[in-house]
Length: 219
Image (cartoon, rainbow, N blue to C red; front, side, top):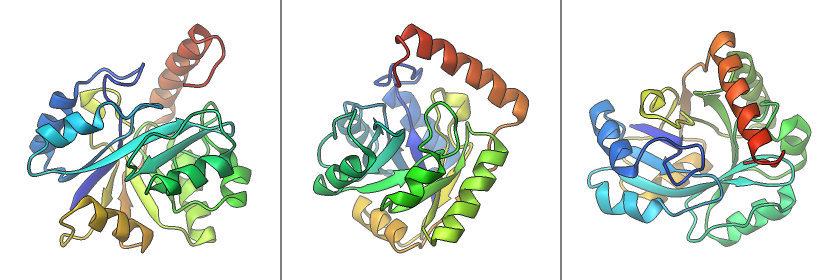
């Protein structure tokens, strides 16, 4: 069963797709599990659950910790930004979720290898649709070394990118809790290779431009 566990909507400052458009595109691509993971905002999750009949919706968020971005999946409430990595993970678990290290080797927003090694993550994102292929390969090697589950997500901010990287979860998953349990147990695999160097450079230029417009603050 195909799952996209890292998707941004117009509830993110840099998102260019509505929840309705995301749901429609998932149906076209036969993506049956979807996590809405907007930047420091869970406003799109309830809307996705209302519109996503036939799709397992995972409420999520991409949190700007002091060390870099962290994905929380399966949360009952948002987790505040700006906390230390360990405290962010602790609050994700208190909110009923799991903590995933997304695109750890991305220069601008990744946690970096040291933060991943020193903290208790539930999984590592090893296939990110917007990351360099080399960064994804390094993340995969780190997940294998640390014996952590590997997941994938498109990190889509626009419809054309949706499904570019995915997670395969067992077909017997019926609920969001089933999917979360499968990830924690390592009953999942990542699909996707990431972007070419040219496309990654274009994404980096846009991200840097937005970073300056925010006053050198992380998303």
